Length: 339
Image 1 (cartoon, one colour):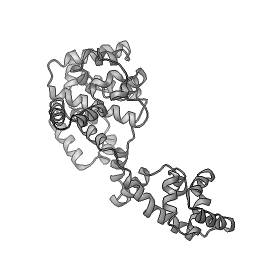
Image 2 (cartoon, one colour; image 1 turned 60 degrees about the vertical axis):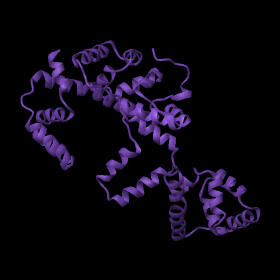
Image 3 (cartoon, one colour; image 1 turned 180 degrees about the vertical axis):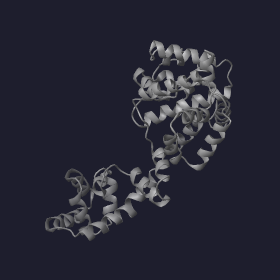
Image 4 (cartoon, one colour; image 1 turned 45 degrees about the horizontal axis):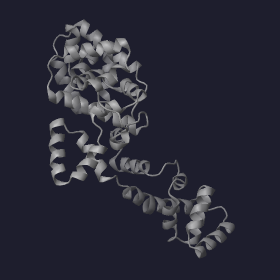
């Protein structure tokens, strides 16, 4: 028990330092090669102050690491994590261009993307173009989508476009490139910029990362100024206590991904209902280890519990965004109660 307690007390930087000290020099060199200078400085400082770490603690750390890796069924890829990785390898202008294209409609080519745009939006844009340009665009996108766009154009213009489509032959590559360039700069970019998220959703997401005391303070103040706005934000928020609303499959997906030590800290300050939601979806052995970890922590700071719970909530939302779990919030969550 004391050995596990020693392991749990290690910080993230200390665990990385132990891992690197245990690896062969050539592997450590490769790992340092993909870390930035600030990360290397932090690890070097931690490593130099690490002192003696018992073999039992090292064994527990590696066992825990292997169990987490082997049980990971889901990897999380998000818009922001993709941008962060690209930024390390590409110039900012190139990253902005790639991410702007990703944020637009789905599709590998410009014509695939146009086929996934609402026909009214596309028709409203094309009605200001030359009939020949419209004809080229409509012959390059999916036929069913082209028919809907064509039907939304003014009749005189649509007939002119149809006549051009009948006479259209192979379009030179440079003309297609010019049309694609115009569509990307004048239509797609403006479309991406105009696709703004709901302001209440943005505020609710910010509130999700507050610690409990700060969240209560702001919600209370907002209720005094605008009660309806406060209620709407609360309905959009997903807190750690809302974990009881996750179905068993979602809880299990979360368990395969979450850092078990941080989860133990989060559950330390959770209600019995939330704890039970997790424990009943663990194996008997995993549940026993989790309870032992929680007990060995002794008294913990509220701030540490809040940080751990915020981490689990953020992870749950990332999994929900990638479609791996389903989160039901506010009025849509049904009649479940926290036990």
